[in-house]
Length: 448
Image (tube, rainbow, N blue to C red; front, side, top):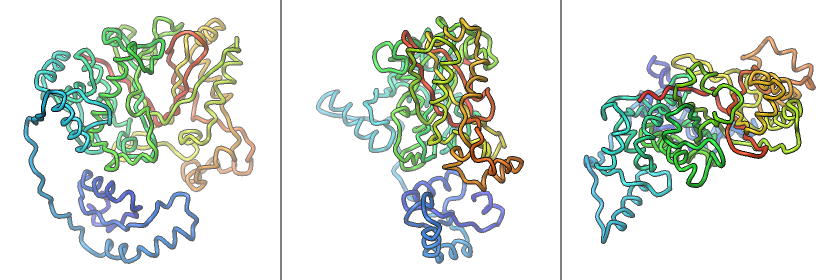
């Protein structure tokens, strides 16, 4: 809509009352503050046609004004300039620290958990973890188009509790976020619980003590590095990318995965080549992969002793039509409107070493598992389309129109077998994890 207005085509945005602040802030971020809005009481989702017509009709005067008046940017609000260095005082250091916590929370800079004070000394110590200069620009992070310098990332790493050894991993993770294929704007601003799943591979992850075994996704001392690294990425999304709750992050319910979701692959107990090798990197390389996910499901199976049986169990997790990505390929791919980069919907499986050995002993590698899941994880067409708009399918895949005459036809939940990403994670016992993904994972090298 911003682009249309720039081209002289009047537009009006229907906006539910809850999303007004989000719409105003987003329009300003995208370069056209004051974009006309037609505010309605409720979102149009899950509404009957007659209720949508009623709300649209009641907003007619707003629509008319928006289409006939010049877009005027709102008056600038003078805000007190922030000091280059903030000072918090109290009866003692603990009281001063508490005042900092309260102030950062009020400003929206905190994830709600206690922060480490980003003092000059702490940030300088963090910067020793990289050879880069503090002012070096790593990326521009949407949706707020914040400039992610090394120093800004170091500040957020300090607040999260990281050590210098974590900073190069955070830099790589932020580069993943900024890759056009990630389409971070969509994931940061959605009403869905998109959370960045971070997977570390290679020796630098081991130096940083990123846990790949028991309780790899936390909590506890063995996963302390996992927790602080995942948390630093979320804080960077907030404080550099301006992914603030109620401002741009409009998540309906939220997710604990958004605080921190990070681990390493258990390369030592994997019967296959490391995950990052499948992404085109050398075995000796160190990498960080980020895949935005909606949620997780356990892959529990203490009984199966053959790959075929395990596949049947895993497929039941994949056939969850209440997840956005299930069968989404039927109505098209996600597309970054600027780069025209398309994303296939991927799902990530963390297979425990015990299950991985069952596959490997039978001669199965990742490809065989992917193909097995692709064959097994199918749903009737009518079930797959329960929460999808048929018109969208007609536009995206007119060649598949014949499917509507075959409602019981089994349809794969993903576009092709490669849409199942597989890493070996965890310790003993037959329990893995299935992540419902949003788009494709992105992998970057750890270069420091």
